[in-house]
Image (cartoon, rainbow, N blue to C red; front, side):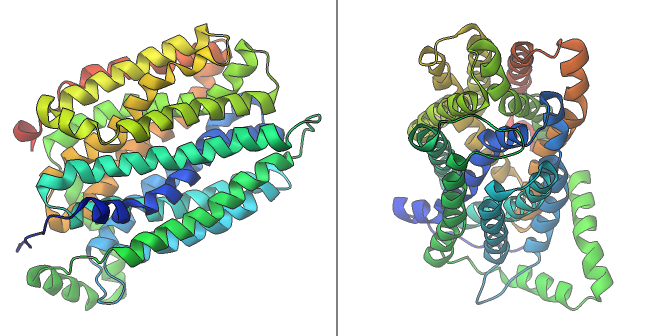
Length: 434
């Protein structure tokens, strides 16, 4: 397969290319911090939270690898290869975010979460591949750590908006079955950012045309009957899994424990503060937003600092150490009852989040073929959503029967998962496993 020599890009070119992640991650920030409280406001029990979040794993498992495989076989001189997909995804996400706080009932909010996740997943996977498409190997570290910066910034803005609007416009008694109006503006801002930031990157960053060999393959694909084109993404995914580098199989073990733990944290941080600090749901949601704001400030600050560190010490060591730090943070949080002091463990969490959002993508992008980068980034996302799916199906019974329906124990459980992930991360060797 022919390759194209990619020019090195300047700092601001890499910046503009990644701006769209701000809007995508603002949406994910609301999912992490605001959507579970909305489910509680609308009458869901804590035990129901894992299964109500099943939309994320299911849509991620189906949408991202398929969109990745389809985008690998797409090219338009006007629209490009990846851009059409994350633009459509951003429009879907924008509409859902606008409607979310207006949900009249729990079933409606759960349905919107499914559509929102489809939109976010449609935007996310081609965007990961888009960065890999544009950058030479020597700039992949800074490209994906720049994504980490915008991941942190987007989630930071989402969560800062939650506790600021709660402080400015909150108050009054909570009413089961209704969403407080102070939450509305956070979602309306997200609706705007979702489309505006994606448009910025689309308009500012041209895609690299495919090589002659790639273009020939794409045109041959277009000439196939519809049923064959429909089957092709599934065949591509199956073939890519069969030929997947050993490194990615080892990474899947790390991801199993890492993402299981993250989903536990996001679902149970609000119930935790109801238990440890005696907060009502609004106060606990605001405190959870402050936690997320803190760790995403750290992420935005340290994301680019990790680039020279990974070059000097290796991505494996920095990644594993960051996972240990995240686990220690989760062990500490349930033991702190002061709303200010409990923010300090988020420094370790933020460093870990920066590493998680950048280092694995950089490592994988270096070892997979250019012409199959889309499908492999989709498979990498499958390694995220499968643990999330396992968590949504399994953690409700674990929480109830093994952890005593105690959110403190849930947080300790998540911390233990991070330590296991760190041990497994020490097995990641890009050159040997590729």
